[in-house]
Image (cartoon, rainbow, N blue to C red; front, side, top):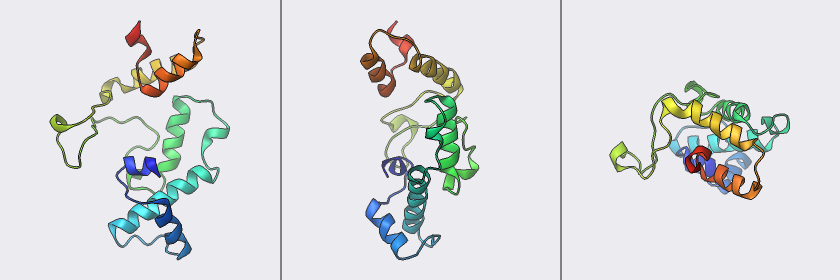
Amino acid sequence: MLSSRIEGMQATLGEVLEFEAEGAQGNESTPKETDIHESGQLLHRVVGGKDPLGRLPLSQRLLKETHRVLMRGARGRARSPGKYRRVPNWIGPHGCSIEETRFIPCPADRLPAAMSVWEKYLHADVPDRLVQLAMILSGIEPGYLL
């Protein structure tokens, strides 16, 4: 549900369950119903075992495959599911310009190389796994500290 919010969908778990209990699956007559429907679809794909977590190690391939599965039938289905973005993006209030953002992630042209560094570090043999995990989760590029 939280990852749906990141994508701009506004729906609670209660709303998804109520929507499904009423048999309204597929009803997308309002923006709110579209958000509820898509959030429910994403939830079912992950919880329903249709994700690749059971057969792939944590890797770029797993991330891309999971994204491809999650985007089936969603608003972003035509935006290269399972592939890294090719355009800049940023996080901030709705409708803000890049100058008004709270966070600007890695530029699109550097993303594949950055993800390769992430994956190599993820599988590296390091002296302190806890520090490794903290760096992976925080998004700190391993080479940044060296």
